[in-house]
Length: 206
Image (cartoon, one colour):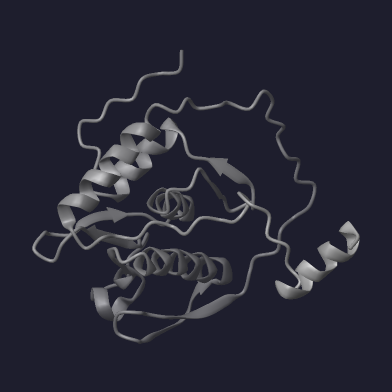
């Protein structure tokens, strides 16, 4: 049998996909349910991350904007706490960013971590008043007996970075769909978002 026919036959057996050894994406590690074990494992992972030098791009070209961006339309927002609809208050991209962050947190939850995302500040009914600069509140804990660690953040980059760290990945995609490598410059984000890394010192690039 020729190599071409053999390759075609394998593709048919595998549903049209040819599996190359070493190229399959590994399954992200999940929380074990043992708070101490999970905490130690993530602490060790963070210490290793703190040793990875930050690579500064050789050249960063500023992007020129020669056009005016039209303001996005105002849309309704549904509070995930009370289910109330906040009418005509937030712009399309605000809602898209919030929903994107919620999706990332859902992926963390799928790894069996105890996480929450609280958007009550975006809802006058839940908060009791309108907040001028509302923030999402991210909560994480290793066990039910422990208090939640809280981090206030509307920055999707910080959630993407945290998810990649929990998945033990080496890089993640930012808002511009560009790959970002996890290195020591990301340690401060992990320290902010998760209850680990207290007192961890980061050496400057030499």
